[in-house]
Image (cartoon, rainbow, N blue to C red; front, side, top):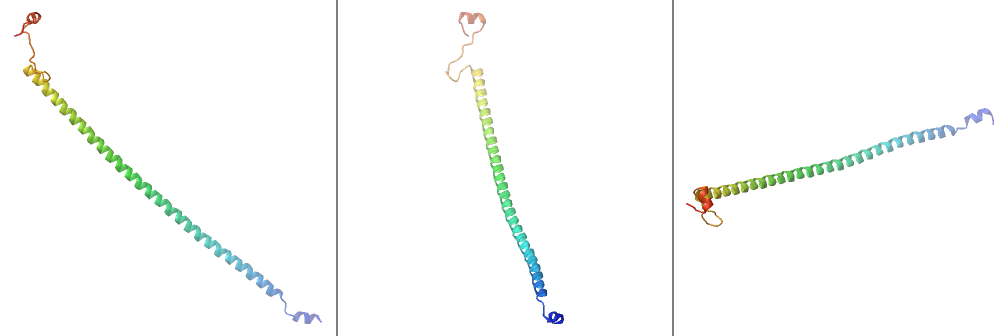
Length: 131
């Protein structure tokens, strides 16, 4: 066979090279698609985590508000109790003042009902004589 005949035989090399190049390009394209899919999955995962975090923050805020309401209710109850104690003390003081005023005016003690003996002078008191 002459050199001219060899040149006429179709070569497989260009087809192999083209197939290799197509494989490389397709592999790169697949890698890009896979990377995009991974990015989408990661974005979705981040969104899920953020949604869960927001739910926890909202639940915590609700707990804080409920606790604050309990504190306010407790403070209101304490103020009401303190007001009742002050009112009771004032009523007790008024009763005590009234009892003291009665004893001073009449000389009668509320406990025994006896009349106090008031001596006319120090000498009479020493002698046991009352008016």
